Length: 168
Image 1 (cartoon, one colour):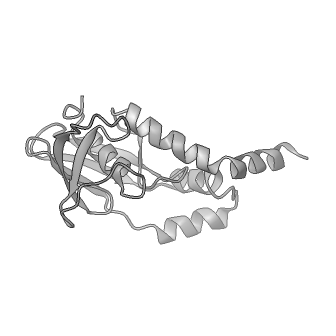
Image 2: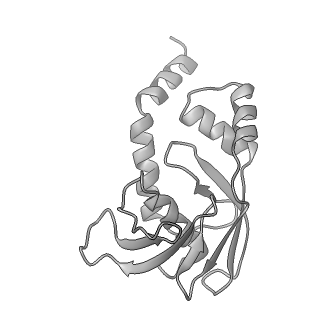
């Protein structure tokens, strides 16, 4: 078995583990900077690049993101174990995200790469280690439950990129 075949097999067998590690890193690494990768999903490689920021921690915080070919390639390889240029092209063609995240860090409201709006309600009084903060999705009025399925870590990572001082 060649190195490439072993690598592909390893990635296929560890997709769930990789997604879990990505979620853990999001919760442990709240500082985002230019060139950093910001998740747009919970699967391995689902990231966009931060290309510009302004007004961080203020009432008009902005983070500009771009889904680059390198991001698409990372997704294709890390999650799909597909090394083909066709996978990269398809991912670039099919993914449509908001290029700008906006936040009012004083009012503790922000948007994510899908345009969804959130509000930070504060620290979780239940002291749940998997859900340190209470986050309300403004479109539905629901409080996210801390799971990947609810979008908790994506919303939290967007907040941490826009308002790094709020979650310290």
